[in-house]
Length: 238
Image (tube, rainbow, N blue to C red; front, side):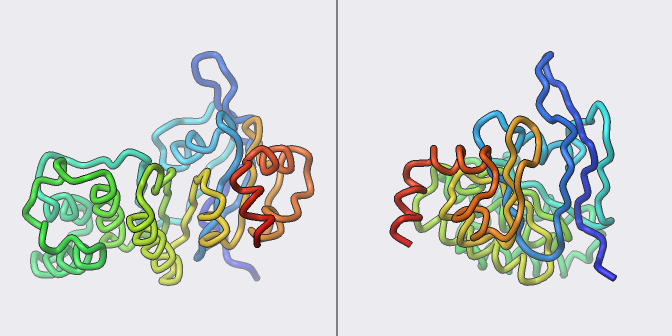
């Protein structure tokens, strides 16, 4: 008997500002591992993450999550005006850990992303790459069952991107179910076990990542992937 999916959406619809965003969207996300959510702008990818996290309430349909801790990493890092260590600690406060265990997790998380020496520095003064490494460190310290990622490496340099991708892969291998929204299809190819293509607020295709990226079955998926010219060049060279 197969395990229940970490995320189950059934017939989810949502209209915002008079415009339909999600149209009877149905999808499952397995655990553990990385599932990528890709598609053109306006397909509903980021909105789907917010519905899953409870930040938006759908007009209709069902959203079910396996019980457990979850973390959401936005494209723009969400940090408070405090030290790097305090920002990591913020994610640990609901877990009712001892002060010693919290301190150990904070130190380990900052070390994992190369920010140990900046533990007491104001997080809001970090560079964009450092801030994103910090919010991933906070998520890593929480040890979530579910991790939602919305373009986690957008506009970051290759070194910061490599650090973040390594941490995402490590969390997935440790048992976390990861749902990744990314326009970086090279990143999707490196990280994702399965890929779902959204178009018009619906899941139009899903399957093993290489099959979806290199041999899409649907017209919508082919149109999106063909339109991503850098990806087309990457695929031709692979």
